[in-house]
Image 1 (tube, rainbow, N blue to C red):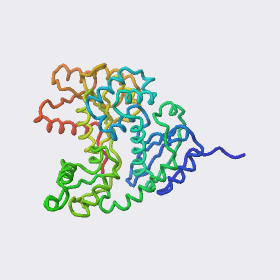
Image 2: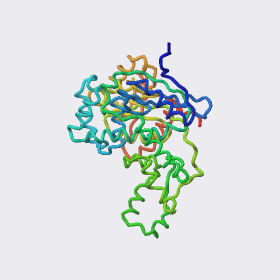
Image 3: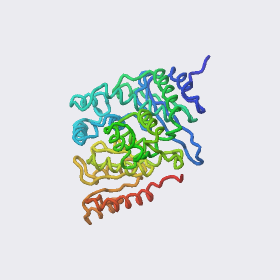
Image 4: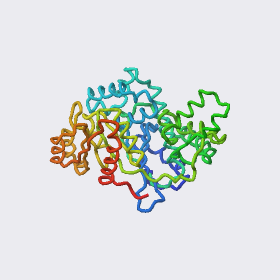
Length: 393
């Protein structure tokens, strides 16, 4: 009598594509969870998840498929969804939807499509781009352990028909070969490019192209941040810059490059301001943290339960539920009740500070003027180092 197929396996670097192909023949709907090893001592590595619905790949990421993780991916590749008006429209849909409806992601996508904010094809392309980008990061060069967790709910949750694994792997192998030809100039997307201004001015590039190049490298952004700002595939950004690097128009300081270490603790923030969420995420992520954002207070606790926050930041004044309302909900959840909470508000009133202390929370005032931003960042960083310190690099 033959034994049932194993839904767990170990893999060394380069082995995962073949082993994943073989093992996926015996599974249908659920999550492949990959615990990826790291060279750093005393580190548990990182977790990557690949979602399947009826043998088709439908999602990839460090989080399970949910409305929040889907929305995050869509904002990554569809910049029009970052517009405050679009975010407000999506927040309204969330507020008018029951938790059951929010769990049926195709219905949620249909509602957003009906508003004209995106198309179904754009959703498909965004998810495909995310999956291939994750394949670039995790698929070939890491060792680890794989486990399949069945989950038939993914058939209902998935907003797309999905992709065949074999087809994705063919594209992943082609992309790997392309990256190999670019890594001498760009060994890491964390590197910050700079312009050789004198050489650029003397070049015969069209004026519009010179201006575009200057705009892209403005503000000390690294290649990953540039790709996000343009909502482009990182590989496309690398192929755009490498010819400029080879001509000397763009410079990279390879001596300052250090291989990226494992991601830092996850910070969760709830605020109804899209602008504040964007600024908070940009600042905190630049310090090495993972950041999970939620704009809708009514679904925030459910989103937290699907995340792994080391600290939670809550705006006080939000429609639907205040920060103090959320504290009560969070403290009733065994999974969340020991996580440090920080209340955020622009109102520096003593009553808010006393209520925060009474609730066992920390308190942080938002900057109300430009000159207060530096102080806010310093206080925020000190607070994070106390509540959720970064691992030693």
